[in-house]
Length: 216
Ligand SMILES: C[S@@+](CC[C@H](N)C(=O)[O-])C[C@H]1O[C@@H](n2cnc3c(N)ncnc32)[C@H](O)[C@@H]1O
Image 1: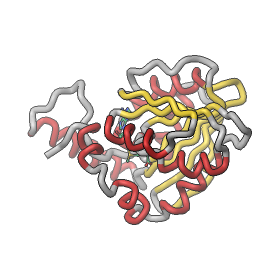
Image 2: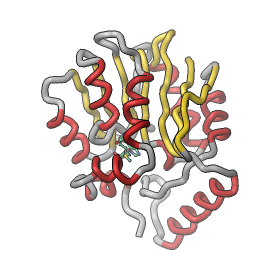
Image 3: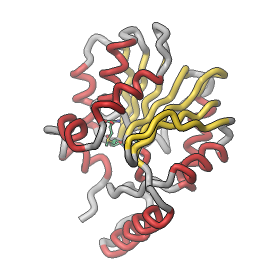
């Protein structure tokens, strides 16, 4: 049975971080690596899309304790856990979908997203990435660490299966349900360029997990 996105993650809150770190190949490398890609200047303004309990933010606050971070997530329980983890940090947490929430203009030194965007299509991502680009300061950039489909066939099969499951369970079109539908790196790059980013670079790769940098 497919579960609603926020409810899926809140139901797995206990043990969530251990699960991420211990079962995803190379997670203990790509979380700190991602934090190291973000601006290291004190007081940097960062937006985290799908921040969850803030695994990447823990590594980032170790490096830049004065960072000002805004986190958006659908799962209220994940956000509460994040708030409790970092009571002394500058954290603004917003519960809702990053597709709906206005992100502002010219606000952030960097935007980051880890393991959250592999649920959405290229068509859904382009308008989101346009908002992300507008929310960045002129020298800003977007760091995306996520897992990707290793072939177009894999991408197509996962999407077809999600459509089948949604139909079988008679689910509404306007709600997000948890099912992984990663794009290929090529299609992700196309979405970012289509949204107006000037350049997309692969910074690192661990099997199907990549860190991409999209320059404003
Ligand atoms: C696998 S967790 C990753 C959390 C954190 N970034 C990490 O790597 O540990 C995915 C998160 O994305 C959130 N998410 C998924 N779709 C979202 C959306 N449309 N808007 C906001 N958050 C979303 C989920 O609620 C969940 O907390």
